[in-house]
Length: 225
Image (cartoon, rainbow, N blue to C red; front, side, top):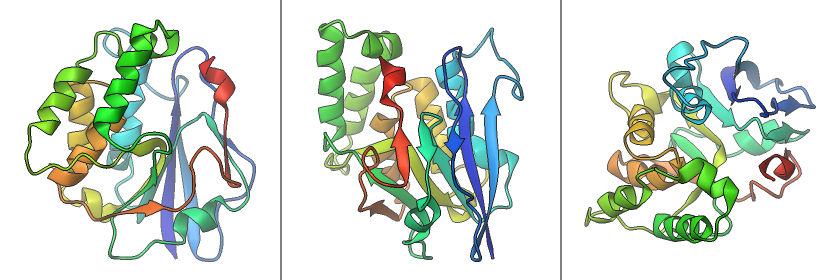
């Protein structure tokens, strides 16, 4: 039986906790939960904004629990329903180390950058609150300057799974690099993920499901407005 760690985090004043409405463990998988929040995590109030603080468990949660077979990240803005385990685990095999949902509205990091810049220029508060002052333009320019990188994918960051093989090298791996890029450039982690998958030559698989519209995860859109 494989051991799976479900990781989530809820930091900040108005952030909801992840809701799990159905048992996760079954005959094939034992599920454990690591739910990071203000009550069980150092505040880092003088050094980290809650959004950057949340990237630590999202990208580095495996450090606290190194002995699991697979790790699943789910944003706290979701509710997990019956069927979650079956849909998340149906494609698991030794050929892939990272399992992702495709972004449903845009297909490249350049498209995502243009969208963010447009919404910020229109005064959209949600975008300004998150990305004003971030080095998103310089970040994408850096990635696109790599002639070996083809910018034709974009992933949804709200839920993904990776195997322990992805972090087998504890000192340097894609997840530590991903966190580094969030600190160096921007917390818009969708911008860095496709490039780092390319850089580290990660074998990944894309789920056929739509993250924001399926029957095993519900997203609470209301928290953004």
